[in-house]
Length: 245
Image (tube, rainbow, N blue to C red; front, side, top):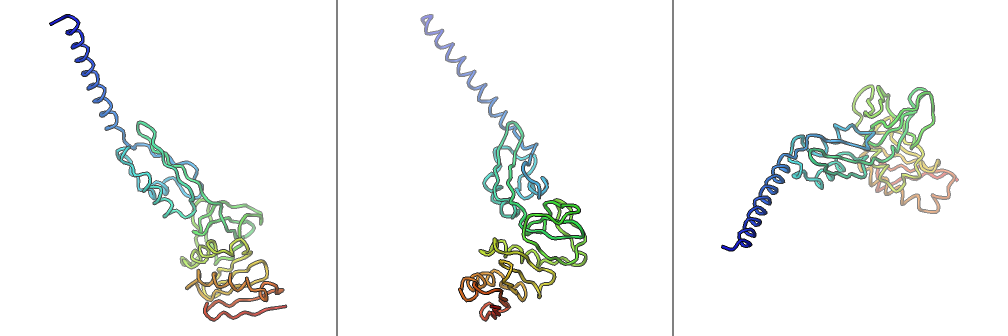
């Protein structure tokens, strides 16, 4: 066998061997890439633990088996205040969850302070000794605690109807016009639009429909041009409108 053929054969064997070694090293490297470090950035209303739990990503899982699309959908579904999520992987063992939260849409006065919170009653911030704050003013049942990052706790009961009302109002086309919401009781719940139209809900059943009906009525010139008006939406099919000219 000629010398040059032997040399070429040796080079090929060495190249194949090197390629096998490299492929094996790469496979082994990726096989040991586990999600041992999950970082959450950008969250203020939710804790990192809550975001990670909502994502469904488990510590120690194979890094490249992480279902990023599924995790994003899960976070957006379970954490209503989050409106954008990006999940990235960083070799060899890190998952980074970047979230963007909506601004809290509501505020309430507790003593001499103002508490800003979202429709889930999660406190964004507390302005001590101040009645200044961003959001629609809400009258709440007696509050036991209002701590930043945690949900408002009431002195007695869960008052789940409060979140239901706030979520419905936040989704309504009237939200930007709402000035106050009274949630001190379920049956007496109401809100004021444009500072002059009082919407009486008469309970929280069909509240999304009631707000849609209210928006339609407020589009009627006879109502919209009134000095003030009260819309009793207890039965959305038979709205009672009282107009003050």
